[in-house]
Image (cartoon, rainbow, N blue to C red; front, side, top):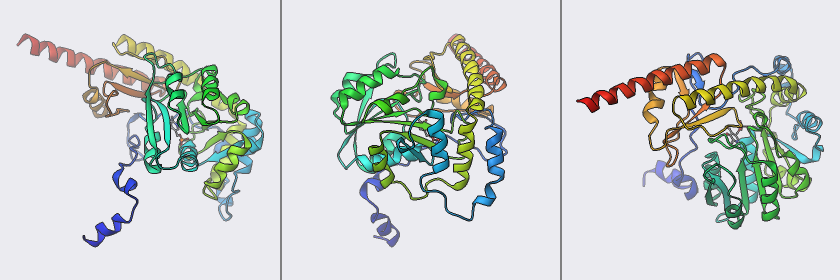
Length: 368
Ligand SMILES: Cc1ncc(COP(=O)(O)O)c(C=O)c1O
């Protein structure tokens, strides 16, 4: 065996076998595209965060606070949760990775309703965990019984869910938490600020619930990488053991703390996104798409039975990026992030003209 291959062979078999997680396309800075593929906020973060960033250079000489104290203190104040119940992550992705690492031994079961955030599959592969995929009910409501019967060591519910945009009301999540206790329930609330309700209270009331939040979407801080986890202190203590010692930079801690101090700014932007979402849903339905009612900052548009890859490719040629998932069950769908009203009008106009030209091509073919 050549020496390069011998070196690769020293990696764990599970890692050699697996494919990496595929994030949505991130075009190079300066590329003029309407970017509706990775659920970023179209509006800027609070001016307070800019000031924190501008002062950031003075912070760089020293290591950060290992437990992101200033950020955790602001989160405790904003969400009225004791500090011992909060852990900060380098994005909520990092918190998910910590949970998988801390909870799952090879062969353990992890269950979640599908389709959902595909990073869960990647994290399960790394830990060599067995995934129990439980399809959402037809209307994207929670398959509670089936999830409970999976008897998984870790259950995850993404609410609002990606890519469907649909959500699970808190009482259903509470019922699931009680059914599966003492096993863990993670509620991934990355998009919850765009929803009509949340389940943070369950982290206070249930000893087996972890609620995850992200500052990437509603707070417009995807580039800073900031996430928060809420759970009982005993759970937080376990997670801290698997965390990188300095997982957040000093700049991220300072910027995140300022963002949380200005939650009113975030809420104003969320209101704008929610208003644009309602118009986008209506316009997509007029064009013939099936759109489940979204509680997130994106919508899923579906043409049952029709592969949308060519349409998504044509949108790309017109400078509009949306997310296509080349996986069974999702090929007839695209996930569209909510941008500014102008961006969404451009999307709807492009779809209208692409679909009209497709229909006329089909009609020509039929006549020939
Ligand atoms: C459902 C879900 N959870 C978590 C995340 C991770 O968010 P972040 O790591 O930016 O906080 C994402 C990002 O797209 C997501 O879609």
